Length: 89
Image 1 (spheres, rainbow, N blue to C red):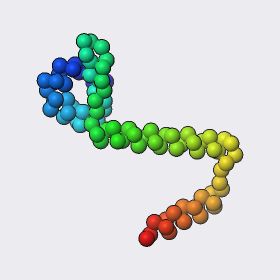
Image 2 (cartoon, rainbow, N blue to C red):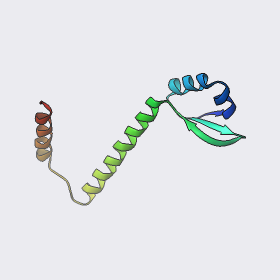
Image 3 (tube, one colour):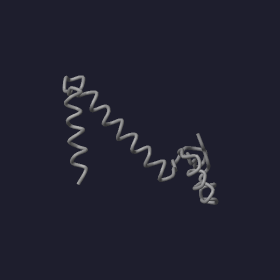
Image 4 (tube, rainbow, N blue to C red):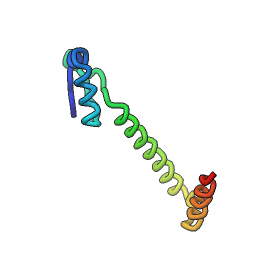
């Protein structure tokens, strides 16, 4: 966990920016010794968002499977082939 003060952010933005890009993890910014903000690079943020979307889709799939809404392997193969065929525009 990376923790920096708001003074460091204010006085040396370039350092914080480089640190965020190099570490690829959130930087916790404190103000008066208390947590205030979280800063991260755009790339790290987008990766995190994609992971969250994938987890949400996985959770939905697990719920559907538990409810008996599943397809056979053969049905899956047909669906995948259709997707691939449609992608070859």
